[in-house]
Length: 302
Length: 290
Picture 1 (tube, helix red, strand yellow):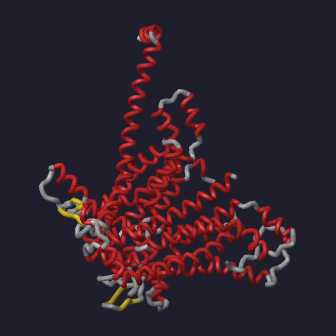
Picture 2 (cartoon, rainbow over the protein chains, first blue to last red; picture 1 turned 90 degrees about the vertical axis):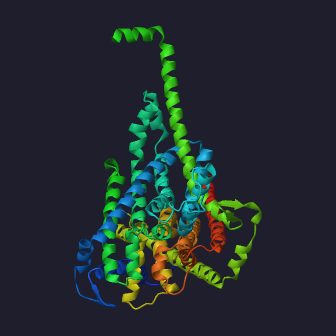
Picture 3 (cartoon, one colour; picture 1 turned 90 degrees about the horizontal axis):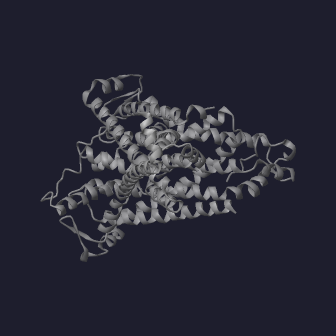
């Protein structure tokens, strides 16, 4: 890659015969890449976005004047706050359902013999490398009028004709997000379970604990950090998503992510879209910070 | 009371223990069945939708049932006649290669810098910045870049998508390279320098060969991420399109059966990529165990 690496600090200067270029210049160039590039492509855009949230539009024109009116509009307008609360509720539901399902799956895989365990863990990870949008689309084949749910119900004679009730509503979004985000929950829990030393379980067993007691007092507390990380991922991804609601949600599945996205498309009000995203960012940051605290138990904190 | 119980226990301790064990084993078995069922259902939910798409790319449906003798490759033929999709595919590949390369260069520079000062605050700060686009909802990364580009007067196109993807995959590439770098013994570098190698030579002949596997793994994973990225891309793509953006447009319009064929091809590509990654990672694990 680059010729920018002047070696490591902390290496004794004994071998410091320069590579031909003056070392201070190399060091400066290196520091410029390390600090400059992330500042330009990550921090500067985030700063621009934060500033935009405090500007406003006048027709098609963006007025570069500090104002809180975007936030006032958001708080005062019932339809915006309703969408916001609905989306928070949706993300919490998806997170809780996946916490239960993800834990069950991770625990089951963890108890399996090694040969099966890693094959199935790989099978759990493979969907992560499949296109997100394809997975959402594929859920239409399950929930739609031609989907398996309808086909099964017709086959069993529960219904005569396929029903349209499984697709294009909020429940479809719930189901789709749960399925698509499940590996994000199950994998961190599995990793946490794998880290538990076998000797701890043996000790618990030798001291006469039942399986349930071992689970309750040893396994569960030690796997909570993984569960917290999984819950964080699931919540943050669910709360900001606009693709699943757009593709399977219909009108009822109008979520906060779609509201934000529409400000950059049809509605064309970038400052308002930025302000809505600041609210989203606030929620995400609170969750990330809480998860980071809870995810590293007291005895592990420095 | 207690005396009675203990007397009974004394009389038939084996029977009582057996009874307790039987009850416990039954409970364990019930829990095991429940967990097994949930796990099977979850795997079914993960894979059944994809299998259906796969089937529907070859067969037709009538009243919710697959018509097995309707096998045809028509949708695939239609697909290859669609020039827009070919263009989108080329765009996706180009974006993938460029952003993966850029991310590796950046990640290496940052990883070396951080590895040299493991405890410094500055290193912590730079790591935090690198992880931001990975942790924040993608919608925020996307619209930040959109606003940033507009402010400096860069119009949307493939170049802006490349920047977006570089930023998005950077954290993963960085993490993979740093982990490997930190596992290398410091004495490797010291020995090389003591033997009179320049720092550039040390980098070229000592560090780079040791990092090769990490870089290959990171590149494959990053390429897979970039190839599928949709949410950030939608903000930055402008008039052109990548494959997922093209798919998104097709899906929104409604149902066109070619989608199933295209989706199947993309999935096959993803699976090949996954197997390649598994091979590389597996190979490295064997290296370590020897």
